[in-house]
Image (cartoon, rainbow, N blue to C red; front, side, top):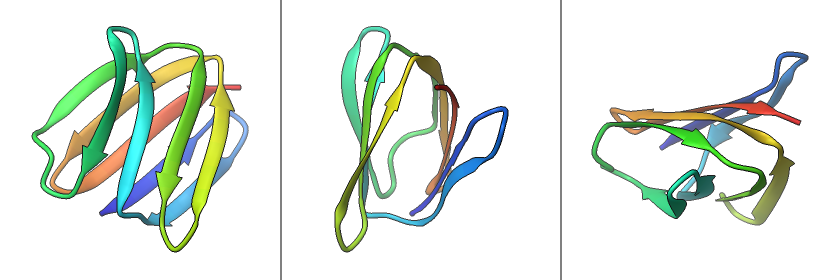
Length: 77
């Protein structure tokens, strides 16, 4: 699936991943291929995403949108 992580200043990541974990307001959740469409606000915490390696991004908050195997995350750093 395609992941894009953006802040107001720049694109932090754009590429193919196998999974994404985000700190949702109601608790941490994971997005995998063919996930149901969702829009959720994010709490302060860590985004964990996997391609060939594991990567993390610390955030203060933001929003995530998932639709058609595309995950877009807008964050505050």
